[in-house]
Length: 358
Image 1 (cartoon, rainbow, N blue to C red):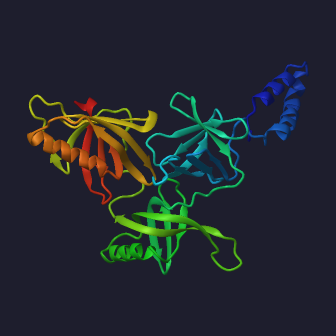
Image 2 (spheres, one colour; image 1 turned 45 degrees about the horizontal axis):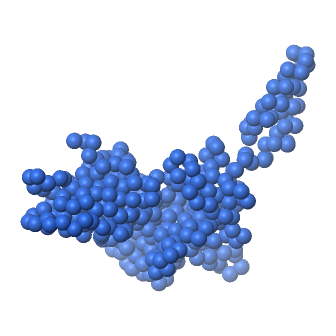
């Protein structure tokens, strides 16, 4: 059956129980099923996401669900106008209860339920609404620019990017910021590198006509090339066995140098909370707290503040290096039971392990 419907099943049950002779019940069941499918099979279940491009927004968040099951999300601080927008993208799916689940660059999926008037409600981890996004009259494609990560290929003045989070493939415009990416790719191939290579870049989505008279299609316009990652791919080398959120992470290395805990001092640690994107930790001398943000454009800490205390000697120097590395964080990766925080140049600045290992 193409579309299961509880009311249809109940009706069929009533047909079977209506006193029809046993010899004719199979025929009546087929006829009844056909009639019910004609009336109900093509009707979407309550709260199901429509298979068309649609945008939902409030004062600080804009979400576009595309018919191909990809999404783009922009979060904007409605108070601090100078704060850069934060973007995410990935795949969305309709859950069994009719809610929409977003899986992108964030550690935990986002879940949204239906709202009155055709909008969506962002839900917390307990399923309670925390903000409402209203359905917009026009589709906002959220063109960016945003940070993208994907497998890149170039040949004969044609380039494409298979973006990691959405699984979608886009043509890349051969102009502007693409030149630096093209040069890096050709140098990689000249050294015997593979045809496909992982690249990180800042790009904007733009509608362009591939040829005069043809329908416009979306292409990527590179605004800034970051780097190639010849040894990496979209899939992580090792799956995470510890959750980024709500895990007590013990600091074990700063810039590949082991962390030392002086006698009488507490060991440095870090913990991230999904509720409110809060972060708390200890630097070895003082506690600190703040917020974090994550999405397709990276991972960063904001508003870190600590209680100022006297922290002389090696402990104070180590704590200062720890806090400076946190401020420089641009990406994160959980591999097994370890957490690695990298800066914008891709260097591992901090390495943690889940505290339950000890």
